Length: 113
Length: 114
Image (tube, chains in turn orange, brown):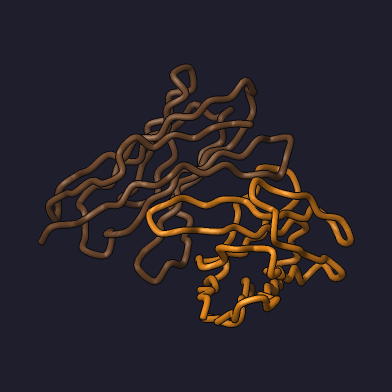
């Protein structure tokens, strides 16, 4: 079955620690995205990538980093510089251009210890 | 950047009744795509319906239909014969035909009353 997987489902971060959230897709989509969702709020774009080895900052990129070494994978690192990382993180992908639909993974819940 | 506005933070509907969720957007483009997504308590985002701006005909998917008013930049979602499983957060989204970035509204929380 084609789809987007995110792991882990829950992640705990200690003070000063970097953590990495995984996102993998087998839909052969070119573009991939990371969103942050806080309680009662909509989706805010952190980073997106339209092609391998290229990515652009979204609205709230500070304290986060990404890489895109493979078409299928777009991991997100939450660095120690992100002072308020507790949130729900959603990964998504879509076909380049043509107004394609954005498909989402199941999400990762990040909590700070 | 385009903006998407959902002016109803919460809505409720009786089971088997009809409810309409509102969405407006701001854009200077003529070619774009609009979406409604559903986020149930599991938090998995699910596509409900998609509309191409160049099509005058309103999209429908079973009990879900849209009222797309391009001149008014309005894109409302109508849910007919509401079911308990329709209870969720609903997000309206915009995508330009020229780019890959999506813009989301802040969502409407729908409660279905048995």
